[in-house]
Image 1: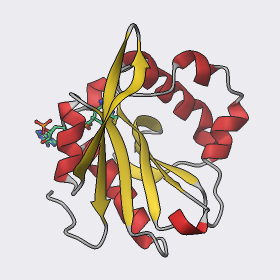
Image 2 (image 1 turned 30 degrees about the vertical axis):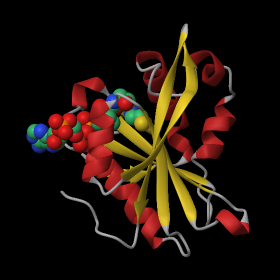
Image 3 (image 1 turned 180 degrees about the vertical axis):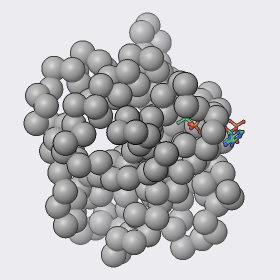
Length: 175
Ligand SMILES: CC(C)(COP(=O)(O)OP(=O)(O)OC[C@H]1O[C@@H](n2cnc3c(N)ncnc32)[C@H](O)[C@@H]1OP(=O)(O)O)[C@@H](O)C(=O)NCCC(=O)NCCS
């Protein structure tokens, strides 16, 4: 298994994995299968496009050409928030959980953010009660800074989002 940045040739596989993520974990993701399955393949290809300073990029755990998990990183081109990046789309296929892939994906995203000029922090949101994900982020150096109530409507109710950030100049997190 290796962690690599995805290129547009993986768009179809990436789309399939993320649709599986949205369908299986409606509490964890804000996007729905209906919304994302309606998008053209070019939308997924654009997200994976390889440019010098991309606004979005995606890492994947790959084994024999198959995607086992993914994590995305986005940046903001606006000058006053260009020191921040956001981790998104964190997912590991159920059969491959609990063996460190999630940790390796977060580490790859943090290393990438650290290597990008001017980036000081990475932020993310995680659904309150998603202890597996919250603990993973904590092990990687993220700390909570707030909870957004009624953040996302799921079914007949709402879930809250825990906001976390990782100071890239601070400790690297535990292994
Ligand atoms: C959250 C998620 C990404 C974690 O992925 P993962 O690959 O299972 O993460 P890791 O393997 O790095 O860590 C998970 C657990 O396995 C343990 N682990 C890691 N390597 C291990 C190993 N070699 N042997 C035994 N246990 C191990 C970790 O300590 C951790 O234990 P804990 O949950 O008790 O703290 C995954 O559960 C997932 O995709 N969930 C659904 C989608 C989701 O919630 N995404 C987050 C949106 S914010």
